[in-house]
Structure formats: structure tokens, C-alpha cells
Image (cartoon, rainbow, N blue to C red):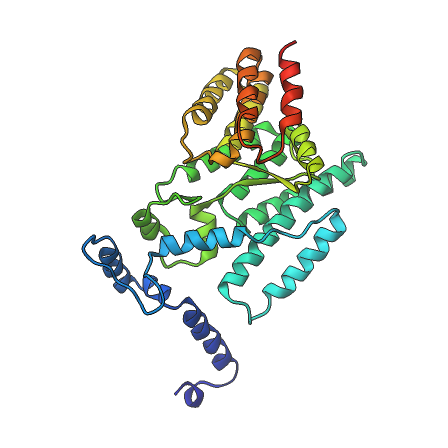
Length: 347
């Protein structure tokens, strides 16, 4: 029917769309409003169990969670300098323009694009830091543009790189403005973080939309700091330690880094609010049972709490936090800087 009534470029585009629906398989049913509510009701009925010939039917939210973890398994290629970053970005651009990519391949490329843009922005700032004002100004504008573009490609927590950049370049109020925006987004009841997601609220908020839209509006993930790029000076010793232990990056819970940036910025613009942010960070690290601070990232989380306590003058509390960091599984390989910080907090 299609071959006889649709011709040329229109036929090609129609085939691509139909093939995309075919690839989604049974998940496509969950993106049909008239069917989704019925399916969700069945899924939540404890007396019913519906299977296909191949696998158990799962909700759209559960499928997206698995997709998120699958994407995370594939690390970006190392990018040691700005030239390499630009070459990767050019290659990615050419691949995205291809009509033969599936939506999942496009999503993976979006993740890699966000990574390259973020790294390029910080490398550019590092390489032009000592240049003349005019060149440094142009580089700064380009870095800001790349970070904002990366936030459009990536998930909610990719906005954190903008806040880090503003803090690094002494724009504390701008950094705090981004932090507040992120806090609002992370507080939404439909947020997907790790395996934590409210299926009904997530489906109601972003069900049936493109994965790109879901990432921008409803998905949070760890903050990844490459060990060969300087993001904020307070974490350079930890990055260097991880690098010496053959790790390419540090992984930090976004909620922990959010409060850290808030504390560091408020020290310069509103000291009265520092203690409130510090109390929030202490409560999070002390009492969270893995919902916002995954167990394997508690080493860096206690470490960051200790750093924030130390820079605000509470050396006794910092010492306790560093000792707690040493007691955690060494996922980020930061024992050496922890021991050095312990020595510093004792004097």
C-alpha cells in the first residue's frame, strides 16, 4: 500500500518512522495514551501476570531505567586535549545527521556530545587562563556556550557543570542561580535517579515523549569529573589521587555536589546562609540510606562533607568526616588525600 501511494523522499521518511516504531516493539504500546492507562492498571494489579512469548511486560519507566544504565555502561573515549575533543564532536555531528541511526543510538551520541562539550569548555578555560583579556573573554564566552549546549543534550544534572564553571570563574551569584534551578528540578516527584523512580508520576509527566525530552526534564545521574581536567580547586587532590590509581574519573552524587557548590558560593556572597547549606549536606550524608547517596559513593560524599566543614572552620567535625571517608569502600581511590586532609585538620 505504501509503495503504491507514497513515493520519493516522503516514502523514505515514512519508512524510517515505521522502522523506529518497529524497533520500540511492545514498548510502543506504552506510548499510546489510549492503551497506556490500561496497561499500567494491569501492571499494578497483584492478581494478574501478563507475559509475551519473549519477556515479561514492564512499564515505560522501568524500561527507561534499564536504558539509562545501559547507556552509562559505555564510557566516552579519553580526550586529552581540546583538538581531540573537537575532532570527536565533528565525528559525532556527522553521525547524528545520519538517518540510519536508531533513537537509542542517537541518545548515546547525545550523551557523548554532552561529555565532549563539557570537557572542551573546561580545557579551553584552562588553556586560555593566562592569555590576554580579549582572547580570554572570547574563550570564556565559548566555554559558557558549550556548557549550556551540553545541558540541552544531557540530563538535569549536566547543568551542574555550568554551576561549577561559574564558581571556578568567580561568578558566585550566577552559580547559585543555576544551583537553585537544579534544586527545583531534582525535587520533582517524577525524577528518575539510579533505580529510584515513581512509575506513575514519571509516566504521567513524560510518558510517550522522546528519550531526549525525558533526559532534560526527568533524569538525574552522577557527576563525572575527569581526572585530567581541573573543575574546581577544592577537589583537585582527589582527582590527582584517582589518576595515580589509574582511574579516569571521580563519580559524585549530584545532591552532594549541589550542596558543596552552595556552601562554597555562599562563603563569598552571604555567610549567614553557609551554615544552613552545611546542615543540609550533613543531614544528607549522615542519614541517607542509599536513596540519594549510593553506598559505593560514600567515600567521596564523606570527603566532600569534610572539605566543606574544614573550609568553614569546623575542624573537629571535618576530622570525623575524613575518618568516615576512610572507612568506606575505596570506590574513588581517594585515601591518600583523605589522610593528608586529616593531618591538616589536626593543626
